[in-house]
Each structure stands twice: as C-alpha cells, then as structure tokens.
Image 1: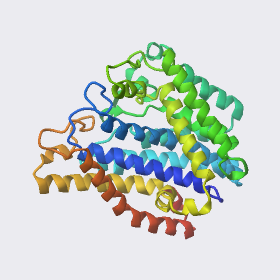
Image 2: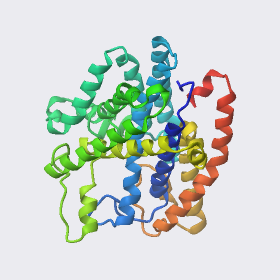
Image 3: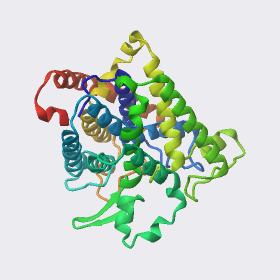
Length: 386
C-alpha cells in the first residue's frame, strides 16, 4: 500500500529507475550489437556504461518495495492489512508476469519466464509472513545471507536443480507446463526486500528520506564494494577483476559484477550508488524537484509504466523491422529464453538505441501523467494494484 504522505525524492528515484530500465529494454529490442555489453573481451565503454547503469533498477525495485511497505505501516496501516496487501499484491504480480508481461516480452502466446515481476511478487508474499518476526533479526539474517552466499556450496545442498535455480541460482526450471528460465531467483532478491523493510525506516525518519543517512549508508556500501572487489570477496569464482593493457577495459572489468544471481559485490555497488542518488534528490529544494517532474510522474505509477513500456518498445521494434527490412522473426521469442543475439541486418547502432529510447519516454509520458492524476483522486481499491 502506498504511504499517505509520499516522499517526492523516493518517487523521483523510482522514476529514474523506470527510465533506466526503459533504456535497457530498448537496447534489447533495437540494438544491432551481436555481443553482450558486459562481455569485456568484445564490448566497448559506451555499451558497457549503457548496460551498467541499468543494474541500479532491480535492486531499487526490491529495496523500495520493502521500504514502501514499512512506510505504509508507519502511516497507520494495521499489521493484518499490511500482510493482506503484500500477499494479494504479490499474487497479482505473479499472475501478470505469466500472462500479460510474458506476452509483452515475446509476442508469443504462452511464452513466459520467472522474471523480475515474479520474483518481486514472491518476495512480497514472503514478506507478508516475515513481517511478524523481530525486525532486527530479519535484518541480520538478510544481511548475513547476502554477505556469505557466494562463499557457500549451496548447489550441493539442493537435490533438485529446478528448485536451486528458482530459489537461488538463475537457470532452467522444469515446470508442469514445460521448461522455463528463472532469471530472478527468490532468496537473494527477497533479502534485499527485507532490508528495505527493516533498515528503510531508519533511513526515512519522519516519513522523509534523510540525506545524511542515505549518503552515509551509500558511501559505506561503495567503500565496502571497492575493498571486497580488491580482495576478491563477495563474488562468484568466475567473476575476478582483471587488469587489461588499457585503462577502459581494466575499469570495466573492475565494475563488471554478477547480477544473475546478484552477488554481494553487485548489491553493494548498486545500492550504494542508489542511496547516493536518493540523498541527492532528498537534498534538493522544491524548485529543483519540480524540474524533475518527468521522473516524479513515472515514479508515481511504476507498475503502469512497466507494462506499458514493454508493449510499446516491442511494438515499435516490430514496426521498425517491417518498415526497414530487418529480419522480423527476431521480434518473436520462440525459444525458452529471450532473443539477445540479433542476426545480421537487424537493429541500429547505439546512437539509434538512444534515439528510440527518447521516443519511448515521450510516448509514455502523457498516459503515465493521466493515470497518475486518476490514481491520486480515485478511491477504487483496484487502482492501488496498478
């Protein structure tokens, strides 16, 4: 449930997350690059940065979801109503993931995966029960799991690879309706949500983001990332920082952290940067915040933005393929996983990706602004789920 008194700086942060997410998804559907942007041996600095900044999105989704639940309770939402909201919201997100959103990604009826929305929904359902436990204990366990999980032989503890992929390590999940890709396993992302719920209230005294506290927490996490990266702690064995002959590739290697599943190093640097941005937004005056109205608008209706932007980006990509003679089969996902390696003759270079991204933001702004206004004045219960 949304807090009665909304924190504008958090809405602006949510809006920035949505804008960066749209950049990544525009790249997926429009880019002609036949390499992964984080493949240090083949990428370049522009592609790497374009992909790296979007790493802030998923941790922001989960942390702010937990923080939002805590703020709603602080504003008077009873424990039973809080649990009901989290559980029903989570079930709704999972249902949408495997229907409307699955089709938006693939343009193929019946195609779906365990993506970010499924994991966020599952995390909210889990939080609806975990919230009854002592917050200090919850925070301690969540932090401990994130700190040590890269060092533990967890795969040996799972007898079923599907459950291992679904709960901890991204991979293939065998379901009654066929094999599916689990891109966002539950446990590590749930821990980030729990931290938002338990630590978030300290960061937002008086229902408002505290710039000094967010800045201090962000600086600590960034410093911890740098230290752990240098000594090689908190990352999979396959993720070392390597020196290259040129500075650009050395720096890219240093910041090339593992997202699937999120390593400790990934969590530290992404949340650290995100906290620094929240501190910046919270320290701005009213005039400066007004100038960030586009981000504020998007941040007030993140779920509406999410569903709308995927259909829009994918539809524009298909239209461009038809109009420009690109291979149209690439716009339809028929395999278990997504199409991430465009064929020859498909897509545009990075400047074209940014141009398409800008067009997407322009096209989604008015619908989001209209819906944000409607949502603010509506008293219908179902509107709060969108």
